[in-house]
Length: 181
View 1 (tube, helix red, strand yellow):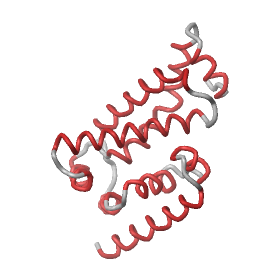
View 2 (cartoon, one colour):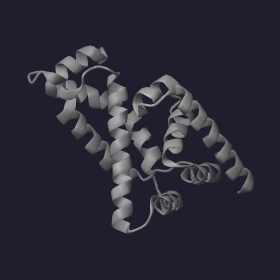
View 3 (cartoon, one colour):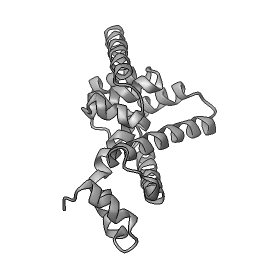
């Protein structure tokens, strides 16, 4: 069932329509958000946890959604923040820095039954793991999700010019990594 975003937001804020509207919201966005989160945390089970937390936050905070951005941009921002917080918490629990955590996550992809990539995909994931956090986010959103710079700008609340520069730098770093590897 397709429903206009504005209508969905209104129904999410009305107690008598909220359950059905939330079901539509989850069914509409769960796959896109799953893959967005998965490209940040890399592990399927961790992604499911973060996705669940994302939808809980969306549900609890929908009344605070002002409509200044698109609903999916707002949810992507929540998902991004949830994923980054999850990684920070996980690295603290394991007492390793984020870089080592990401290196370990890439290595664990080989044994992940949900990872369908080949050796080339593993190399690409290793290259992406070496990027600074912001470049990694921008690269994933632009390269894998094929989002427009304007959409990424809305999600990350940053300028289009800065995004283009970060994406270019990330691409060059990945290219250099793959040539070296």
